[in-house]
Image (cartoon, rainbow, N blue to C red; front, side, top):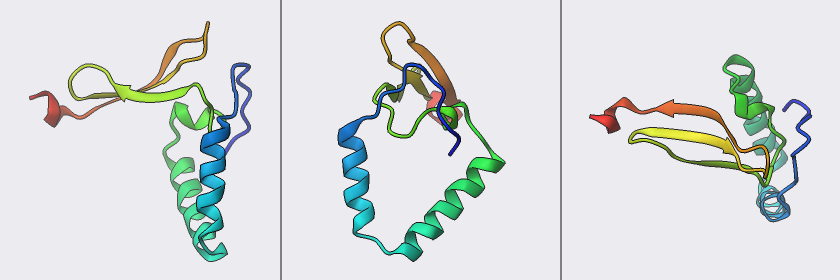
Length: 92
């Protein structure tokens, strides 16, 4: 993952601790396989969300209009939509 340069970035301690606990229960080979898949996909199809810091407490996801899924920054003074995807089958 690229280095985060966002001045609003703050680590979500709870999410980070949960991820570390989960990772402690899987093997090194499984971690290597997941990282290879993640970084391969990330390089081929980067999204604006991939520029955010890992486990940012201000990064949120949710529903917008019907069939619309959004990723947004919820930092005070920096609220904005980062990425939007539409599932057209949910609109009809």
